[in-house]
Image (tube, rainbow, N blue to C red; front, side, top):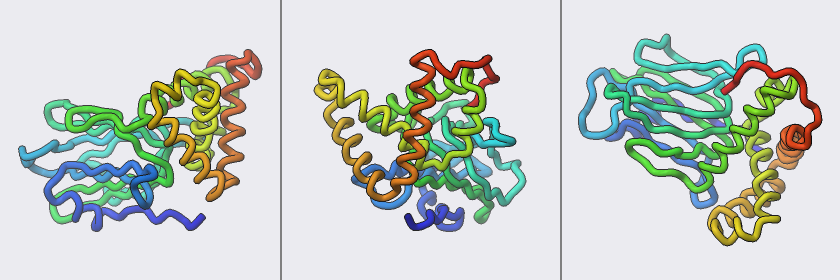
Length: 241
């Protein structure tokens, strides 16, 4: 696959001229990588959602690490971010939330605004909030992240393994689990045909475009399944993202 080019704050600012944030999930009907663009302004516009805080997760020394971005954060920021929840909050403590498999964050000052751009080779899904609904599959991804957290608690070394994985491999792990569950669940397919079609499309695309990430995802999923079968259990660890 061609290397992903992170969105830069200067180009993100053009899309944020009249908005507090812009999200593109990068599912089959949307070309290009997924991105979440956020503008932190000195004075709220009062015309739309005005973020003042961005919370997300990184990896430090193999462990999940909470991170936050405000107008007071040292700039520029050029770093990766990990899987899990991204939350943006305004001055009234109202939030909008997203789920991501990880990627790259660029943030800098553009004129008087602090502009943050999250870019990922895997979908960034809307999880709901004040100004948006839920993307198709967001509830399933949230449940999968819960299973990853449970595995981290009980399988020694898994937190480091999943943290070191490429975002596309984490996405592949989710797809392999979900496609198998829906393949053997006629009721699920009948209740959620749009999501089933999405799983099939994305699985085929990823296996063809990045077979290495697909194999890495299968390995991550196998560890999660081993916990469900009662194997590979060790002492609980601290919580992660």
